[in-house]
Image (cartoon, rainbow, N blue to C red):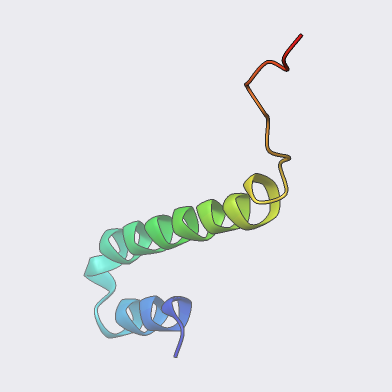
Length: 55
């Protein structure tokens, strides 16, 4: 069962805890966003050489 299904099940069992389930989903989505950025953007960013070449 994934986190979305667990949160939905938690809400169906106890609707008063909607705000808790919403916060869990927000945190989970933020983690997924950070993983996406790291995997698709930062890893593919070319390394920059900050040293000057000898003249």
